Amino acid sequence: MHELSIVMSIIDIATKQIENSEATEIEEIELEIGALSGIEEKSFEFAWNQGVKNTPLQNAVRKINHIEGVAGCMDCMIDFSIKNLFDACPICGGHFLNIKKGKELKVKSLLVNINNKD
Ligand SMILES: [Zn+2]
Image 1 (cartoon, rainbow, N blue to C red):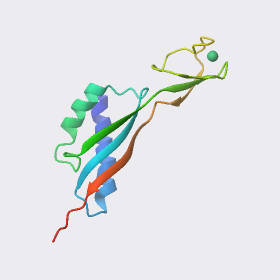
Image 2 (image 1 turned 45 degrees about the vertical axis):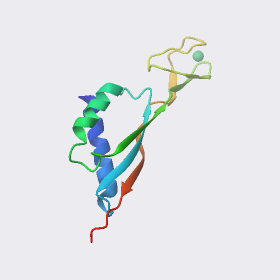
Image 3 (image 1 turned 60 degrees about the horizontal axis):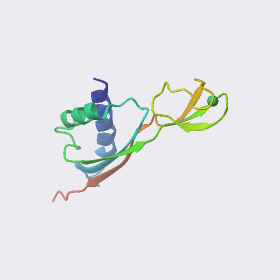
């Protein structure tokens, strides 16, 4: 499943981020998911719940920022909002588009809880 491998790589990033710190758990994770990233929210949710078990992310609060898709038409040079990757330009109907926003999938921030070990 596509979403599961995405979740696994997010866990990987998060785990590496806290590896050299005192933190053992991540309290909150903020993600940016673009409308054109191809991620299906329900599958992502499911994959997340499966994937985070026994990882530093298992109790983390997940915040998702949705990024709207924006494309620039290479023919008439306008920017427009786009919902699907294969949408045409609303002005000229062209398909030569430069996707400017909406394909991103990234970890924006992590909030950790540092427990005193002594
Ligand atoms: Zn156009």
